[in-house]
Image 1 (cartoon, one colour):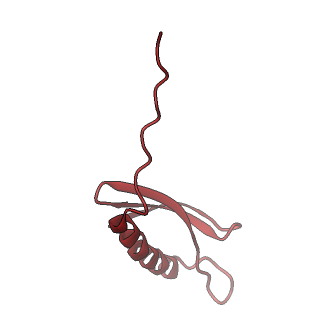
Image 2 (spheres, helix red, strand yellow; image 1 turned 180 degrees about the vertical axis):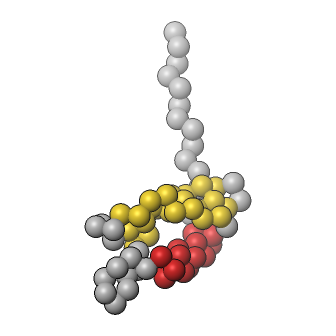
Length: 77
């Protein structure tokens, strides 16, 4: 499982993360972690993303998460 943090939106309290596994790419928001002082906690957020990745991996294996089919091209007449 490969994960990549695309962006962190501190005000929304989430990070956009892309997960890649067995040819499937899945992007979703993951809640960020904060310190006791309310600051963004990068290490704790990375640990949370690793936990979410385990669930994403299981869903990919079960077929619940797949790549979207390519868009249909309009028929040219």
